[in-house]
Image (cartoon, rainbow, N blue to C red; front, top):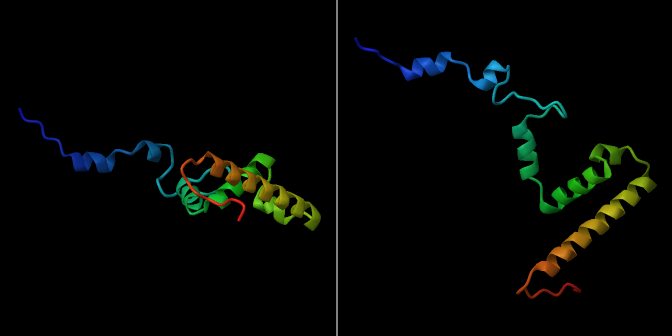
Length: 107
């Protein structure tokens, strides 16, 4: 008695875990923003360090870029100044942690 197994035909007919849940790799959307995890990763990976810090600070404040756009100019300026000061403080703190580097921080 001989048993033959063709892995390619088995793989093509058996659904993956994602497919059996109704999801496919490129089309899975998150409930929060309608973006796929891949889109969210690419957006985060393409951000500069300053943009990442800004996004994190906005998140801590419970705000988004959209919220800022809808604020009146005076309120928005207060938030922007707060973000600017916090980023500057974090950069200064990071500079103090680095030993062995010669940097004129006052310049």
